[in-house]
Image 1 (cartoon, one colour):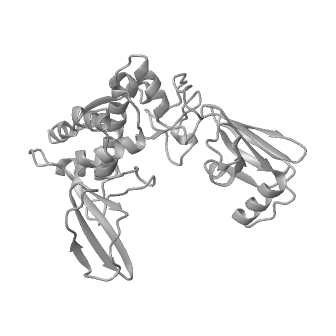
Image 2 (cartoon, helix red, strand yellow):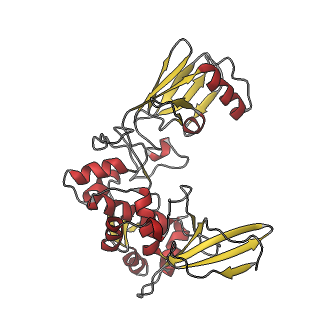
Image 3 (cartoon, one colour):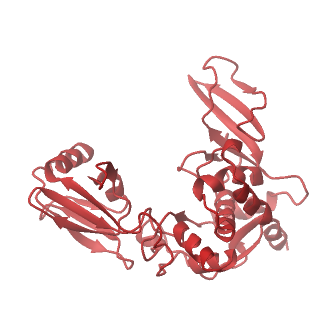
Length: 329
């Protein structure tokens, strides 16, 4: 991956011509038509739209300059009234985008949270656009190279997580757990979900395809250094759930009676006569920049560089075209 990024950065333009990205978007088009066509300009999207029809499938790709793409990403990923937090988000989103380009492919990213949420021109907000424009081209770097593993999440709940304890792969120097007291204003800094044992057991049995009922216990078998659950044992000596499977499969009802999957893996389990309560902290995987924490730091007077250095220790910022010059010798 690093070798690919090395050559990719060598290919990035050094002229005033903007770097274009290709985003798979949801846009209504007829299923029948040419295999490939360009659509007329649409006020919802900057740039241009191309349609690809193949084997009964239709894909619509929005092709536009990177900086314009970010204007439609940043307000969807962090909508707030704090400029420095929004600048930090813009730089991280730009770094993530450049790390996930797919040269030669039909599109680079989807418009959903499988990549970064992108709403097009109709999602743009004045403050977010200002943050993107005032940090134009700026990315997170580590040891003079693009920091290709940057990640972010909504609310850490008191501490971010080591990357390798949440996701597969080797440790990353700048993705280490840090205590964070800045996200306490988040509505999901603390949360509680309750689930009936019968309903939860039935759902887990369907999802896992293995016998679970009766669900008599949920026991935390392992935590990581930030307090997140790494392994959860179902019943005393039965199946185990690991990592983000817990956020995907476990659920409960909140105080408003709404069914929700677990917001994070930083939780305790309380068992009652008829079911379980998950008492937790934070929202998201917990790795990298805590967005509510960035907001809290911005409110306390910190600028975007201080915010990024806090969550990505040992990193710096630079224009991505400077990286090309450095790599070019």
